[in-house]
Image 1 (cartoon, rainbow, N blue to C red):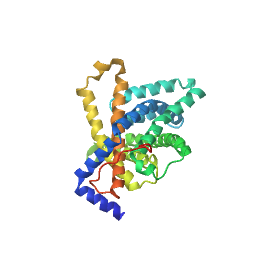
Image 2 (image 1 turned 60 degrees about the horizontal axis):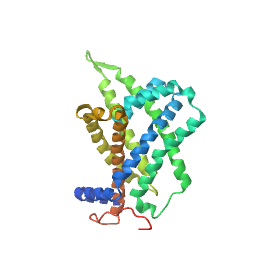
Image 3 (image 1 turned 90 degrees about the vertical axis):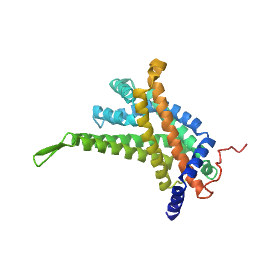
Image 4 (image 1 turned 30 degrees about the vertical axis):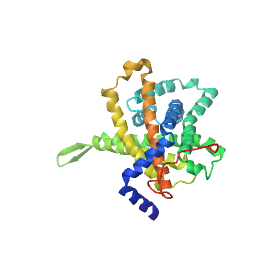
Amino acid sequence: MQRFGRHAAQILRHPAAFTVRTLQGFQANQGLLLAGAVAYYALLSIVPMLILTVIALSHFVDQGALLQTVGRYLEWLVPGQSGVIVAELANFLAHRAVLGWVLLASMLFFSSLGFTVLENAMSVIFHHRVAIRRRHFLISAVIPYGYILSLGLGLLLVTLVAGSLQAMGQQQVAFLWRSWSLDGLSGMLLYLLGVAGEIFVLTSVYLVMPVGRPSLHHALLGAVAAALLWEISRHVLVWYFSTLSQIGTVYGSLTTAIAVLLSLELAATLLLLGAQVISEYERFAHEALDAPAQPFTTDAL
């Protein structure tokens, strides 16, 4: 803990040097190329995963409330495009009888692709860990499905909490012949719930996906950095799509897919950049702050 505080204090004294080192390491590891792969497979994974999750949870939670929660927090991942995805989910729920075993198996497979590619991308960024310790292939095979189950349980919990907060927003507080609506407080708590959930998910990704035994402090550091950057970026995306973007004119019927892919590309870039922050912080414990970035290499090289 003392070492963590000492290193953090030194980084705070030289933030520009640490930032440059992180960006150089990200470039050396071909971070944008990795982010493109993660975004592409996430695009393939997100709809099947949501379909499976919503079908399972609709047996325990009201379908309308569930879709409303999914739509609200999909806006955090694909700003401005959640309505189209939720409409497709509602359409699939209305025809869930067509879900057979073959379709179920294929959706499970595609749901896991994004997590598998993300794990491989993390292996490149944390190559200093992989050189020391490798993960058993059975663990790598189970991790995606464990994450799908965990995200489903998390969505169930968030739906229940969000429903309570929305109900609170319809209430009023009376005091000294005046009444105040709790709608503003409810909205603020829903936003904070989203931010807390975002940081929690990112922390879990940085704890589970890379090989080795990561520190909770390091994972939290990367999660907070990635969450802050994404909060800024998603508001910029919302503004861009609503004001300057001519994406609908250029891509026509492909607009939604392109916009979702662009959002996922940016989110994947920031996710891997947060991982690079952790990686450089770990290397900082053994190397000087101005040490050159060490790119990922294979044994042949």
